[in-house]
Amino acid sequence: MRFHFSSALWASILATIIMTIVMYFFDMNLVAALGLSAGMSGPMVFVLGGLIHLFIGIIFGLIYALIFEPILKALPGFLAGAIYSLIPFFIALYFMQPFMETVGKTFGMENVPVDSKASLRATPLFKEEPKGYTYNPEISETWKDVDSEKIVIPADDKDQTWLYSLISHLSYGVILGWTYRPRRPRVKKKKK
Image (cartoon, rainbow, N blue to C red; front, side):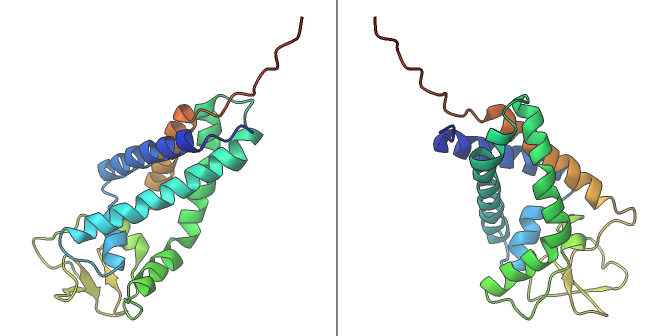
């Protein structure tokens, strides 16, 4: 059995931290978006959002170590991890909205749908009210879309969220594959 739980756990944690830092450089505030979708405010936005993101990173890391690493073992670790990272990337691309709504329902925010794409691409504070949005005092650092009643943080005009998400997921995969060390098979000693 190649699976090594503690190595997979630590590799997943490190990869998730690196991914979060990469996302920060692209102004992708996933931690805040997750915390806001759960209805948190103030520092709890980042605490709960960070814990949710870390939990997801660990789950994907364990799946990689248990299932995909043995399949891709002929490749260098960083390359195997990069290839694997395309799976969570496509999952995030197509299922982020339902996931954010599930987080909201879990924390009792079922009547406050969150626009995940808009929430990812932004900074949490604005000096002036963005066009088409009004400030929502019930959930701090967010804006309510006047037409759809969704809580959002407006995205930039040049929306390249998918590309930034791909780069962030690739960084996760590269670090995961590079740092995960599977168990080595035991070699039976020959009797003399």
